Length: 385
Image (cartoon, rainbow, N blue to C red; front, side, top):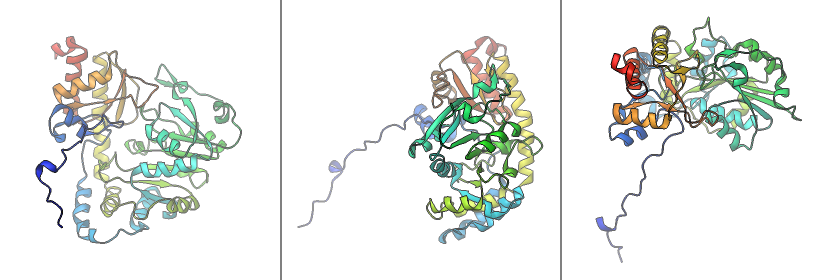
């Protein structure tokens, strides 16, 4: 006997719930649902992505690669690894591409969990998530100890083990440089003693590309000198490809081989691989990015100062701003009235609800944000405008 054909009345109604407020920035679906518009109608200051958009070299690489999607990617990513190796002047055996820096940081946390891990806080929430997944022990160290009034570096002589309370057993360090969310840049001289002391050091340089080579503080050149050192890089932010997910780790070949056994094959798709090869050689795009940031960031900082807002000096493409009012409330007001999305900092427990993080965008977009903020937090300045 045939089963009864379902009718419209017998099909259960959708039980989908509104998208929850995101932990990370850049969730345009949540923002669009909140105000009843399309995601592309939102001006996004919550995710620190290069506002110059997808490089032409990336678009060309995608078009060229489309016919190859019927085949599996090269599981060794030889061409991409060679492009990264050439970019940094190292051997490709020291490189592991990943499905975004996030995948590589998860692999790092599996290894970090074998030690007591020092972590400067406030810290990127995914560090704690990854360490918790492997029952890692975390020693939280306040980055405020290195800042005076949140502004200038204070040299400290204590060892990493002393900072952690002299725990027994091995110690590790997970360091974000430049630091998210403050934008503070650790100097190589600050980092080297910790590398020499710790059994494992993971340096997340996701935002280092926003500094020209004459200003950056990358420790990539030390990886061959210190086998306990791993550097993780992201191509997502600088090259505006968060939807493709692409990053890479630089580490001793033995560690690279071990991490490769811990993950699924083909974790990096063919489009991401091709784009990575292309953008690393896109010197014009890189130069335009440096020129944009050199103009747009000081103008945004000046505008925030005129509004009476305090912020941490940042070397990167985002600013951590302190305000006297509830940032979640301010976030919703900006969304509902002007379709502007800022990042609240509730995912950083040490900061609470009086801090917001904003990305630096194009000059006219930054001006639009400043006008909207002025009308909400400083109407006197707004009327003068």
